[in-house]
Image (cartoon, rainbow, N blue to C red):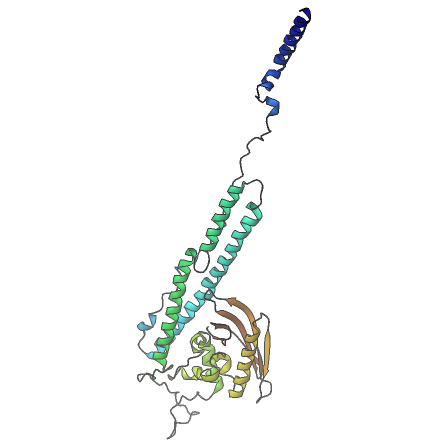
Length: 352
């Protein structure tokens, strides 16, 4: 009996010790503070980087000169007004539209770089935050594609440019007699004034202007207006008296590759080798590529064509900026021209 009491007393003491030490709680299955997993304190994510500024196209400065030629009466004057407008819209295309398109490509590259270098795989952002930012960047990137929402204004102004240029080229031919249009009957022929040194026109004279056979005279007119006329005369040439001296030199076989200011100084065989040099350099499609030519008929007459820039248009066509040099009798003529092609395999032709 005493032995059992001693055993009972020992059991009570052990139970009391366990209760005081929290052991009873452990027996009941309730975890203590020391058994809980460590949870780090919440840390706020840093702000996400802002998207780069989107380029803007200046549409307000697009030349509104399409119908200005109507303010002129004579076909020759209308043709000059048409040409001035063509040069103006071509300049807008080169100086505003092409840089804007390149800026949008750079903008898309910046968007991709922003995610890959600052947010993607950055442990300071949660996976959900990274994914949401990725979706935002990709949506803006897609909207900045050529057919995306961000380029809607660009597509509109490009369509206007193409329409205006085709219209102006048609009106130019209407007023000068090219591409199937007859020469206007109301064109005034301005004859050279007769002087003591200038013989009167003989019977049977063909009626051409006194300087029409003089290359130097033709080139003076070409230098005066050649930079402007080159935009339209690449492929079309006017038959009107006054334009004929400039236009005929580049009409026909070489009209799509030579500009008037150089072509007017060359005979037919020289035009041929100069045109061949231009064609050869366009086939290289490489900035810095140069093709030289030498006159087969005259000593000291030579030249070259050099590619100074290469661009791909938003519509997929490829354009080259080419500098032509002609040296005739020790005098150098240097002219820049822009040549484009619509599809691979097609030849390049002068645009402006």
